[in-house]
Length: 239
Image 1 (cartoon, helix red, strand yellow):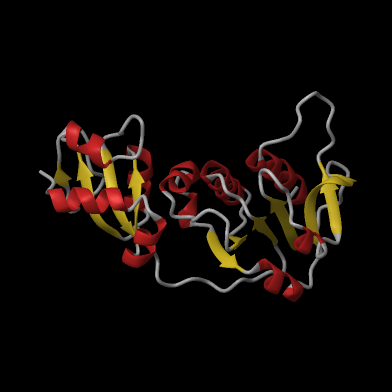
Image 2 (cartoon, one colour):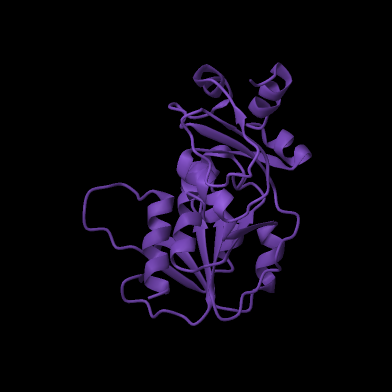
């Protein structure tokens, strides 16, 4: 049984301010929570239906009813288990040499950020640098879309206008006018800038792009989803 105060607290974690103040966030679903437990990720509390079998018999679990899970869940169809997880305290420094680093300029859609984190993980990219107005990595929808990859890809939030001048490697930018990404030579290391869904890369950041690249269009679609576009370009730059 979950108390009213617990329920209110869990529901409040949908708010970024509360997440930052408490240092906690929500993760939901059998696969995601199971992966976090297997990885030893720090969990503050776990709430689950009787049908859920914990992969760790020593884990303390609060058993709840389906109607309680529905009240605390942010999913349209709650999936057996919800965890309140703790944000890691230690972050690794940004290391640019010898690898591709993704830079996100104003990504607002949580699904896009989650997809980009998952794509980075697939291609072995350990870090992302994001503008301060990019959606919060601990947004529940980002956590869900990343499918556990947020545990392996560090997202650093920076003032990009101040940080970009420190970059001494090639800077690739996803722009409408640029070199065909399918004929672009893959670098040993560099930075790839992906702009926001509606506005693209901001003018003050475009100035730092040394290698504009584009995905050639052959069909009738007006634009590509930011997460999809990032995946195509990352695949080409890491081939």
